[in-house]
Image (tube, rainbow, N blue to C red; front, side, top):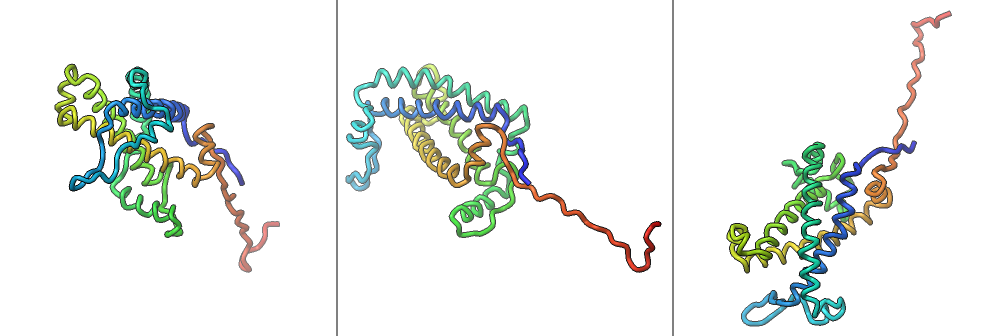
Length: 235
């Protein structure tokens, strides 16, 4: 028997879907800013093995030569990104949803079992409630990353006014490295998250839009009690 069950409240869905375009704009504008000084690369013994990013990358996405526009978009939408994050965190605290999100002691062990199940190496997935152990770790990590992006971003944006944040990050150059690494982390999270959504199926994706999911519930079996030989039927 199919039953419609509420899964995701409106506040969670709203902040989730608003965050996606905001973060996309932040990454896009951040890459335009990075084009102005793309110094990060992997070098060993004087030989460069990898560079972020090749010139063809900028040409294909049209990122070069728009530094002022990139800074304008980045510094404007960062406030919306921060506000959306604050609303989400306050909601999880006030509503008690944080209990479903924060990893538990057994989450790291169970997350490995979830990964094995997703790779079809393990047949049975570990028991879960609203989110499994891997989701708890990933969703909590993305909140911490958002806070890290805000702190490092302010340290880069206003290193004099927010000198204490710049000092906390280990200086301007280290803050920029952290900010860049967090951006790469967002992109990886996007890719993994989309793959997980595809693997989870349409029912899970629909629940993030409508807030409800359709589940199959087996009706409780009807147990017949038959009288024993010693019992007489009621006349």
